[in-house]
Image 1: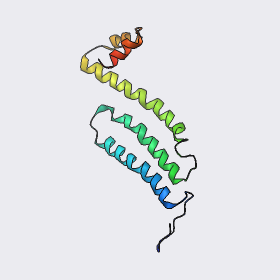
Image 2: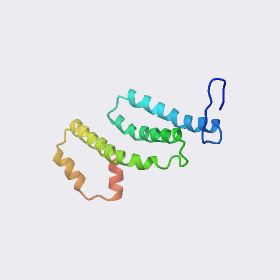
Image 3: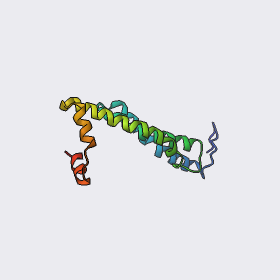
Image 4: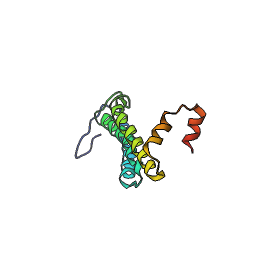
Length: 125
């Protein structure tokens, strides 16, 4: 793209392709950040997973990577391994406080053998 003030060069076929990829990553990232900072619920930390994914994807677009949306999952996986169990444990502690159950009954419930349909039904209980 060439204007009277500056010239932009990219390895994309044209500037419109670059703008398409960039806005396709930037707009969801902006909306997710807005949601993260304005959310009042306890589970808002899990929104960091897609935020990190879109941030890595924007980094790939800005670095003009030829393998867009492939390498980001390798970097995102360790974040998910830490964040998802942490959010689940916070949820378990909050429900423990709300329901008044002690931690022993919660552990016993986790250790009981249940069929697939019992587990599925407990998800929506």
